[in-house]
Image (cartoon, helix red, strand yellow):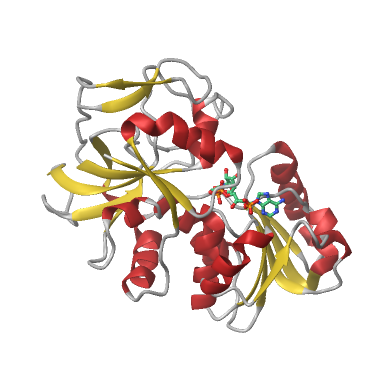
Length: 327
Ligand SMILES: NC(=O)c1ccc[n+]([C@@H]2O[C@H](COP(=O)([O-])OP(=O)(O)OC[C@H]3O[C@@H](n4cnc5c(N)ncnc54)[C@H](OP(=O)(O)O)[C@@H]3O)[C@@H](O)[C@H]2O)c1
């Protein structure tokens, strides 16, 4: 099959295009998919450059890519929910059993990929492969942060830092579908887009410092995590929560420390979000897409040969919505 591989950890020039790579074989609980489009996420470049090598070890040659949309071409003998020909999407997990580090190995910068049945969902009829491939990781991260990590009611307030990227553009729409009041932090040129997605207020991060704001929120979802719980906790209501998206020692330790000392009676909470591949949660997002409450914001679409350029862009940290590779 045709695919983009890396033979060692490195920069965005590390990819080579192979045309005769062996196709993956689905296990009993897995589905084989002909990939039509693959989403590009910051996670992909962090795996590519070796930043996550201790947490997500891999063998070379390695096919990257975690978000996939395509057509089912083969099913394992225990698969019950999908048939050949179904249009599906998902955050790939080719491990036999679910795990916190079961990201794509091999991935979906390739003509074919496999994933466990429980990680996949059918693509709604009104959604094309590009929009579907842009969705899983970012939308799941946002959905799980807003639905599973904290319990929020309609009318409560959310401050979303990093609102114009992949996770942020889904988080705004999912939050609005929950009836939340959303304040989005972004650069000035992205305000109009975020208002069109439903943001009630926008803060231009170049002209207003969050640290000096006197507003109060029920939840701060810090997607870029250039802030921290200690810097922003004065913006939380007495029972408010802070969720950071970034997997670094500081945010993980801070959330862990807060949890350990919760018996002291602190009413505010400090969490770290770690996305889980889940066909069930993605099904909930798919329902929101089917009813047009959530749509993917696509920044740019690339060919497989342009994968290095897509990685350069995602690594810049200033894309708008999502980058997608069309197979
Ligand atoms: N823990 C998890 O499970 C998990 C899951 C998904 C993502 N993540 C992490 O979450 C982060 C965001 O992911 P993503 O997919 O949304 O990334 P992305 O698509 O690259 O988006 C980054 C966005 O951040 C904005 N931004 C940059 N500097 C900012 C600042 N100072 N203040 C506010 N916004 C700023 C950029 O907008 P401008 O161009 O306007 O600056 C850009 O739109 C990444 O680091 C990713 O690795 C973690």
